[in-house]
Image (cartoon, rainbow, N blue to C red):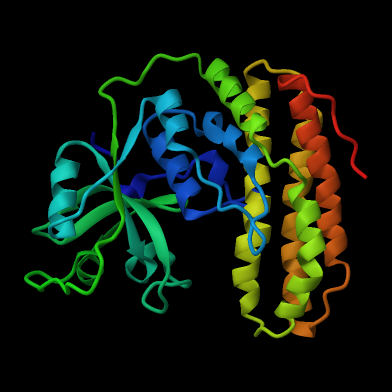
Length: 328
């Protein structure tokens, strides 16, 4: 399959600049853009966001399950065994009209200019759609966009031409996406609702925001010992993951409403409240880090705990027949 030139790419509406969280995480953003570029509706796949939990030192790094991609869009994601030069494997799979997903160093990704490009190192996932080994150029999906890199950046991803591989360096983790010749004909609303029911049945048994709130005094004590720039790490792994996840859930529910589903407004509004509160908390945490005072932040988490109960209770009552739990 041929994709348009990266210069003509326009991000999907789920990445619109006026959203609270125009970017989520590298994996979910990647799939939003790939699915949209294939002519499918990415909002349909977002029911999994109800499973967002608390992991003690971070929120769940939420990722669309590969099984959902196959069920909704016929996309088959498989691990690619790397035993030779990575470049050769990518050339082979792209020639077969597959997208190759590679764990790469953002140091060599021009789209991260001003963040990591040529200044720092960060693991991220890119989806390679086109490669020209003679010109040392490739096109790739990353975060909320579709880009091109070449020259020294190409060598940074694959190694310089003729460069011997260091046996002490492990091969990267790589997957490839098989795209069906014809998209499956499915009732997207019905399949999305069935998936939402399944994900609701495995949502956290206890309130993740209540658990985070209980731990926050310990987190605050640790944050007080950290340099101000540590804010970015903490905020990405907690506020951004929660906020972006629940904004996507709100978008999923809005899409279902547009398909004719009813009784979702309360859950959608509650999810939007979480997204907004996390955005505000992120800004307040930045100031708190400078002052080493964290008053009022736990109360914002508590507000999200109430909204989470309302959101999950509404959805579980509608789709699973469960009585809504009352927030304390």
